Image (cartoon, rainbow over all chains, first blue to last red):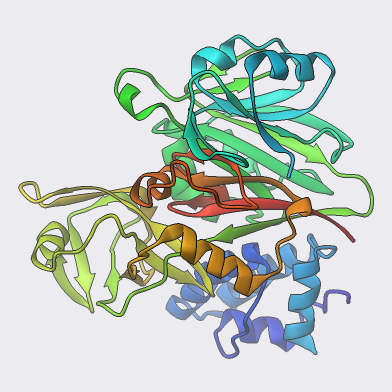
Length: 77
Length: 333
């Protein structure tokens, strides 16, 4: 599965905490622990956009990991 | 599993044969080794496959990655340049890092790594070098660069390993601690020490709170990072000064809880592994466990199959962890 574009609303839903998922990719979980807190404290469009960029980057740079593939299916299927 | 406990003579032969090695051992024995493709940190405590937990100043814990990688490069960083560690990681591979305990770089990495540019875009695993506990205050932890022969007590060494096409590196953790049912604890600053804590939103002196509530400080604080449980271990509680010190920093805004007790580490470890059932020992290239687990759970002589490796002053799985086993899997894709 390819990484859906950053404009896909699911990315925004994750970093704002609107939707939560049980993920496998350790780096994404640690990053999201920080990003969701940051966005909760400052839900401005720029903070949300920056958070989506960071989350998208670690998924797209680790696309060949089995855990990343599983997580993409969990989030986007 | 490619981790073994070897004599210095055997490790010397491996180095001379051109093997690519991740090493852990007492400083004196590591200093005897010839130059070659290796990186090391000081520590004389290990979990071996046959003896379980053990301590030795003569033997060396050896992880042979020769057959897994296509090339390696060893980079020395300082506390400032280490901020590039994720960005500069190999595109298809992993970075293996060793940092001396209590160095400026250790403290800086612990506090700042989660905010380094490109956090998590490349796998980063490693550990914090230490010393025999009887040498605390007498010797400093060190890291050794086999290629240059440098021995550092300040800075960090990172071995960047490239993997062949069709292979991928994944990092995992095994943390037996879970959040307990007690108060929600938050802090107002990112720091290795705290005087004050917010207990369910109410400001209290943390040392007095620990004493009054008789918290067992062998059990860490546990934070839930989107399902990943991250521990902060207690170093010292000074009731007179009203100060609590930690082995890793607490971060402001994160909600911590004191951990539930782990009665029998090895039994619960085996129960956890049998439930998860997803870890194949043949794929585990490296693992290490925390010296606090070794001490508090009395792991000397006890096995934690399929995981062996050094017993460390801190574990790194993308960021610094405490009282956690971390492991690296190399798998086909």
